Image (cartoon, rainbow, N blue to C red; front, side):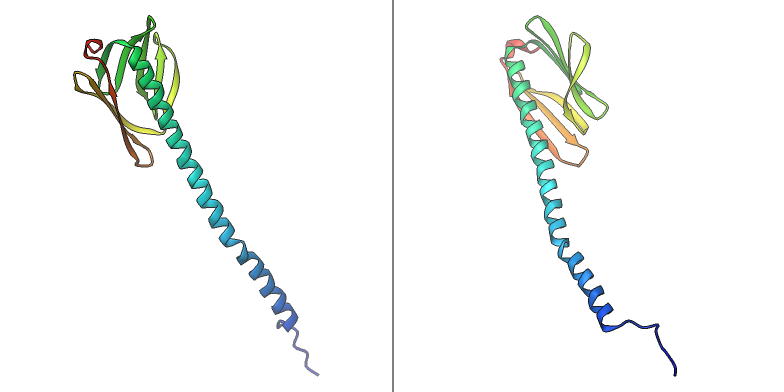
Length: 144
Protein backbone atom coordinates (compact mmCIF):
# COMPACT_ATOMS: atom_id res chain seq x y z
CA UNK A 1 0.00 0.00 0.00
CA UNK A 2 1.35 3.42 -0.97
CA UNK A 3 0.47 6.34 1.32
CA UNK A 4 0.54 9.87 -0.09
CA UNK A 5 0.38 12.35 2.82
CA UNK A 6 2.01 15.35 1.16
CA UNK A 7 -1.14 17.07 -0.18
CA UNK A 8 -3.83 19.21 1.45
CA UNK A 9 -7.15 17.86 2.54
CA UNK A 10 -10.34 19.67 1.61
CA UNK A 11 -10.76 20.75 5.22
CA UNK A 12 -7.27 22.31 5.36
CA UNK A 13 -7.90 24.15 2.10
CA UNK A 14 -11.22 25.55 3.35
CA UNK A 15 -9.59 26.64 6.61
CA UNK A 16 -6.79 28.47 4.72
CA UNK A 17 -9.35 30.15 2.47
CA UNK A 18 -11.33 31.27 5.52
CA UNK A 19 -8.22 32.90 7.03
CA UNK A 20 -7.46 34.74 3.77
CA UNK A 21 -11.06 36.02 3.54
CA UNK A 22 -10.99 37.29 7.13
CA UNK A 23 -7.72 39.14 6.55
CA UNK A 24 -8.99 40.56 3.24
CA UNK A 25 -12.14 41.87 4.92
CA UNK A 26 -9.99 44.26 7.02
CA UNK A 27 -8.34 45.93 4.00
CA UNK A 28 -11.20 48.44 3.33
CA UNK A 29 -11.11 49.46 7.01
CA UNK A 30 -7.38 50.16 6.77
CA UNK A 31 -7.88 52.40 3.73
CA UNK A 32 -10.74 54.22 5.48
CA UNK A 33 -8.59 54.85 8.55
CA UNK A 34 -5.70 56.05 6.39
CA UNK A 35 -8.00 58.56 4.66
CA UNK A 36 -9.24 59.77 8.05
CA UNK A 37 -5.70 60.31 9.30
CA UNK A 38 -4.82 62.33 6.18
CA UNK A 39 -7.91 64.48 6.67
CA UNK A 40 -7.00 65.19 10.32
CA UNK A 41 -3.45 66.16 9.32
CA UNK A 42 -4.83 68.58 6.72
CA UNK A 43 -7.21 70.09 9.29
CA UNK A 44 -4.30 70.57 11.72
CA UNK A 45 -2.25 72.40 9.08
CA UNK A 46 -5.18 74.67 8.17
CA UNK A 47 -5.82 75.35 11.86
CA UNK A 48 -2.17 76.28 12.38
CA UNK A 49 -2.29 78.61 9.34
CA UNK A 50 -5.48 80.34 10.55
CA UNK A 51 -4.00 80.82 14.03
CA UNK A 52 -0.87 82.32 12.47
CA UNK A 53 -2.88 84.76 10.33
CA UNK A 54 -5.13 85.87 13.19
CA UNK A 55 -2.28 86.32 15.67
CA UNK A 56 -0.05 88.15 13.19
CA UNK A 57 -2.87 90.43 12.00
CA UNK A 58 -3.71 91.36 15.60
CA UNK A 59 -0.07 92.13 16.41
CA UNK A 60 0.52 94.12 13.22
CA UNK A 61 -2.58 96.24 13.88
CA UNK A 62 -1.03 97.46 17.11
CA UNK A 63 2.57 97.48 15.84
CA UNK A 64 4.66 100.50 14.92
CA UNK A 65 7.94 101.02 13.03
CA UNK A 66 7.36 97.93 10.88
CA UNK A 67 10.46 96.86 8.93
CA UNK A 68 10.20 94.23 6.20
CA UNK A 69 12.98 92.16 4.60
CA UNK A 70 12.67 89.01 2.49
CA UNK A 71 12.58 86.48 5.33
CA UNK A 72 12.03 88.69 8.35
CA UNK A 73 9.66 91.32 9.71
CA UNK A 74 10.28 93.40 12.83
CA UNK A 75 8.10 95.92 14.62
CA UNK A 76 7.39 97.37 18.03
CA UNK A 77 4.31 96.22 19.89
CA UNK A 78 3.62 97.41 23.42
CA UNK A 79 7.19 98.75 23.72
CA UNK A 80 8.69 95.37 22.78
CA UNK A 81 10.60 94.47 19.64
CA UNK A 82 8.73 91.63 17.91
CA UNK A 83 10.45 89.61 15.18
CA UNK A 84 8.96 87.07 12.80
CA UNK A 85 11.60 85.14 10.89
CA UNK A 86 12.35 81.86 9.19
CA UNK A 87 14.46 79.46 11.27
CA UNK A 88 15.32 76.04 9.85
CA UNK A 89 11.94 74.52 8.89
CA UNK A 90 9.66 76.86 10.82
CA UNK A 91 8.58 80.45 11.17
CA UNK A 92 9.31 81.72 14.63
CA UNK A 93 8.39 84.74 16.70
CA UNK A 94 10.73 86.32 19.23
CA UNK A 95 10.37 89.22 21.65
CA UNK A 96 13.35 91.55 22.18
CA UNK A 97 15.56 88.96 20.43
CA UNK A 98 15.19 86.55 23.35
CA UNK A 99 14.06 82.97 22.84
CA UNK A 100 11.64 81.99 20.14
CA UNK A 101 8.12 80.70 19.72
CA UNK A 102 7.39 78.43 16.72
CA UNK A 103 4.37 79.79 14.86
CA UNK A 104 4.38 77.78 11.60
CA UNK A 105 6.00 74.38 11.21
CA UNK A 106 7.21 72.37 8.19
CA UNK A 107 8.08 75.54 6.26
CA UNK A 108 10.32 75.04 3.24
CA UNK A 109 10.46 78.68 2.05
CA UNK A 110 8.88 81.93 3.12
CA UNK A 111 8.96 85.53 1.99
CA UNK A 112 7.72 88.81 3.41
CA UNK A 113 7.16 91.69 0.99
CA UNK A 114 5.66 95.15 0.99
CA UNK A 115 3.02 95.24 -1.75
CA UNK A 116 2.10 98.90 -1.25
CA UNK A 117 2.34 101.54 1.47
CA UNK A 118 -0.56 99.87 3.28
CA UNK A 119 -0.20 96.18 2.48
CA UNK A 120 2.21 93.42 3.47
CA UNK A 121 2.28 90.00 1.82
CA UNK A 122 3.53 86.80 3.41
CA UNK A 123 4.09 83.85 1.07
CA UNK A 124 5.01 80.44 2.36
CA UNK A 125 5.78 77.08 0.77
CA UNK A 126 5.47 74.07 3.04
CA UNK A 127 7.55 70.90 2.84
CA UNK A 128 4.62 68.99 1.31
CA UNK A 129 4.51 71.46 -1.61
CA UNK A 130 1.49 73.46 -0.44
CA UNK A 131 1.81 77.18 -1.11
CA UNK A 132 -0.20 79.72 0.89
CA UNK A 133 -0.15 83.49 1.17
CA UNK A 134 -1.67 86.10 3.46
CA UNK A 135 -2.16 89.84 3.04
CA UNK A 136 -2.00 92.21 5.98
CA UNK A 137 -3.39 95.74 5.70
CA UNK A 138 -1.57 98.33 7.79
CA UNK A 139 -1.73 102.11 8.11
CA UNK A 140 1.06 103.61 6.02
CA UNK A 141 2.53 105.66 8.85
CA UNK A 142 3.48 102.46 10.72
CA UNK A 143 5.73 101.06 7.96
CA UNK A 144 9.36 102.17 7.73
